[in-house]
Length: 161
Length: 316
Image 1 (tube, one colour):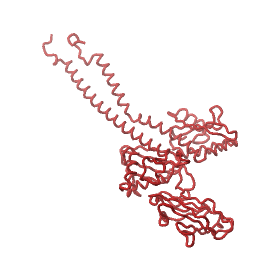
Image 2 (image 1 turned 30 degrees about the vertical axis):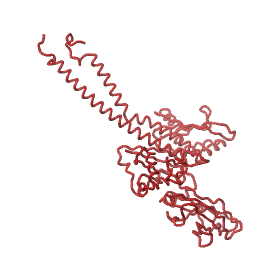
Image 3 (image 1 turned 90 degrees about the horizontal axis):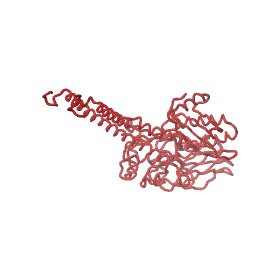
Image 4 (image 1 turned 120 degrees about the horizontal axis):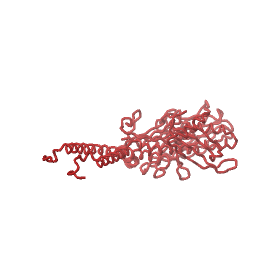
């Protein structure tokens, strides 16, 4: 571009406008990169994941998981679910909600253990719509046939239903 | 043709004004971005330090693994209990926390004798003294806490900090540590029966770090009285005599914290139980240590594992 032939100011040119846009986008990006939500994004999930793993660990250490497994072996599914619900509610903070499943997805020994009983549809919806979900899993031996099966705990942040 | 210099054109004037504005705002924006990046880096490091510290505390024994027996050797903190030489993840060993609490106390933090241990603790928290560790019971009630130069009834100062990171980990803990357990002491014939004398160790600093209690479990009222002899021969008068009434949940002595200190010493101690109960009654004796100034009415909780929460707080 030549000042001799183009009488318009440089600042009004399309090139300059585009250049300014690019500069502004880059600057906005840099500013957003340092925002607090990124810090949460990096450590919030880490905490969720640790809540889930800690909960399974504590259930093992307090023998609650063994009692649940024995109840399941005796066919007392409802009692096992109630115990798991109460134990997890005590272990996890109030703002962290959970879903526990014992066994494989399509044929679980115990499933849909949520923070409160009797509202499975609402809890299922909350689980499916959660922004981020952390998962902890263990493999354990289950009586009476002594076969391996999985214990899966999903946790997410949300309000109590 | 305009004969004036180009610098005096209106276009050039606008262009210069805008250029100055853009340069100024770019400088301001870059400065703001730099500040945010600094704040982010600080926040990130604080978050990271708190998360890592909590993770190491609940998952490792510390270094050396028995540092609570001689805190002068402390290199790295760790609160996990030990089983077969390995750390039991998420299971707290209260004797380790009790020693940290003693070291962090107002009277001990700056004492030259603890300089190495204090240095190790500060390094564990990134060279900072701005930390607080609290243990809550399953109902969210505070059981114990510790921070550098802590004093009973005072606060750590985290509440006045601009930036605080709090990390909570679910753990299993006992209310205290069982230093001696007699097992079943069966009084087969009834009447005065002296059981064998046993040893237990008290490590340096533990008399200050803990309150010590004897817990007695018996069959029933017929299992009483039971005498305890600590560091003396088993001939009357005893160190303490458990008399009726019978406590189904277990009886304990002393009633106030610090009441046993005069009978104990650092190193090897001996304890003997004598039953004066009826025939075929049993007794079980436990010597437990709970962090200093704990509530005596909770002492019996030392015998069972409790769900608890370990909170690590770091701030700037």
